[in-house]
Image (tube, rainbow, N blue to C red):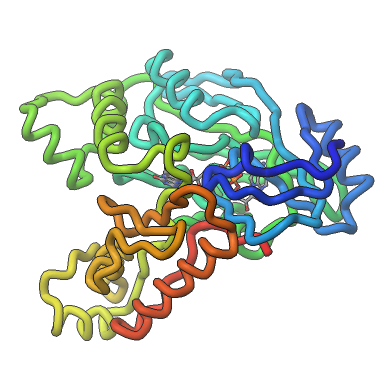
Length: 336
Ligand SMILES: Cc1cc2nc3c(=O)[nH]c(=O)nc-3n(C[C@H](O)[C@H](O)[C@H](O)COP(=O)(O)OP(=O)(O)OC[C@H]3O[C@@H](n4cnc5c(N)ncnc54)[C@H](O)[C@@H]3O)c2cc1C
């Protein structure tokens, strides 16, 4: 265990806060030992720090997960089951899958962070969410210090959420995740608008999983700021989902609003569009701003504190609420 270290290298916002107690787990035993000592002190589990905002110095003991390993544990005619350590980098796992010609995670190329954090908010991009390839995960209960297996139905996956981000938030440490990937006849997801238009533009007749991954890489690197250069956590807010009545209220005054009809009575609209309509795309205050290409991404222009970033996000929320009567919900985990 390390005492009083800076978390700046451990969060992609690049916020410089001090952690009082910081431990690293390389295997399950490290986690059991850590929980034995710290279970009563509300410990905080940390992956790659790409979806977390530290508002101030952290008194809670922190456990950084560094469990490695990618292993094929079962094979069927069409599928392979792969168990991956929670501390593996997500994109390294995607690259490993592509190298082996296993399909299912190609649309999720280049999402930062670790494999163990991926189920927490059911990561998603370019028309695919993690739950489509998730088989199960193992996690250790912080209260009982016991390992438990969670099957897909136990995880209650939904848009940017799961049981680990709701009822069981901060209650379990995920140690490894098992994925079900296709071995052949891959089902290609190429319908997402920006992906499809690039495929059409290049006249690609039969996109493979490798082609999809390359196109996703190309779109992402053009659109999203690299956290190694500009501190950020990707999308700061979730895209709001509303009922038909509320959607129609917005549509009646803004018929250019982009939307996705989830069901008969549920509509999702881009939070980025709402922020843009409030003239806050590229808006800057002190050392914090919204990105000029992507209004949903809040960026640290240099030495912003966590509290400054949080206050900036609050002002965006208030302005959107005032104009559209929609309360944006944070996608990023805010740590007090
Ligand atoms: C540039 C950029 C682009 C992004 N694009 C996307 C995108 O397209 N789609 C998307 O869904 N997300 C995206 N994100 C957000 C982020 O990459 C994901 O949410 C990712 O899964 C977070 O992983 P992490 O390891 O960094 O998690 P962290 O930030 O370390 O942790 C996130 C949460 O999970 C908890 N946690 C972490 N590890 C464990 C564990 N082993 N057990 C229990 N709890 C744990 C933490 O306590 C915290 O609450 C983006 C972020 C950035 C910076």
